[in-house]
Length: 250
Image (cartoon, rainbow, N blue to C red; front, side):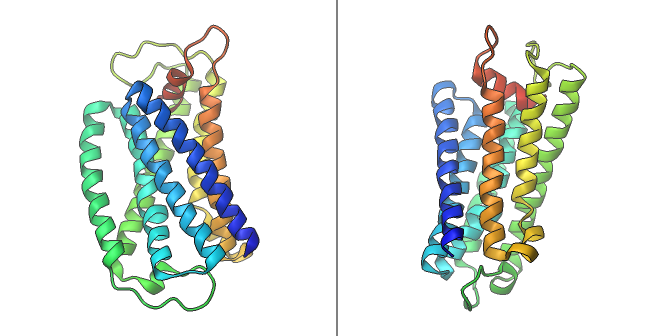
């Protein structure tokens, strides 16, 4: 239990550092994808914090609702919104954001007030054992569809970079200064998303609590590594913020 709490605490701190980085970028540039990523990482930190609290103090229905809502339902869709902005432009991104705000509000209401069974035992509760169909549908759609958007977008971006193609956004004319670094950043982002979805695979070997703690920590570290890789500013090249945007777009 102590190790699980330490892993969750570390994931929380890294997610907060990541969220502060993207928030700083959004405050300086006001680019909508940075705002979407800031919301996603704040939700990620909230879910990790709920896991941290539960591993240190024991699970309660309240802590599980927060963990389920922030970690299983909302954070990946907001991360995917950043990809939508970069791949399809501001108009489609703004429409998607309005729908996502509505769906996020509906999901929040459903998860927080849905009837739930009692938590028995000290291990991580299962949503299928506590909740009815509605919260689990939101989780399946939110995690599955959004993760697919991120992974497909990243693979498409890597393919464009390796072929030396220009960005897909309207009016973009910048050249890729370091195609290998850009491709690596996209690969890290897609890998991080896959790791965050892989807790079920590890659960049989590590146990539910340990699997979630490990995948949260490893996933956010890989995502943050992708951010840092794309944000490195080579001598005489574009600013780091522009390189990060290019890394996701292509």
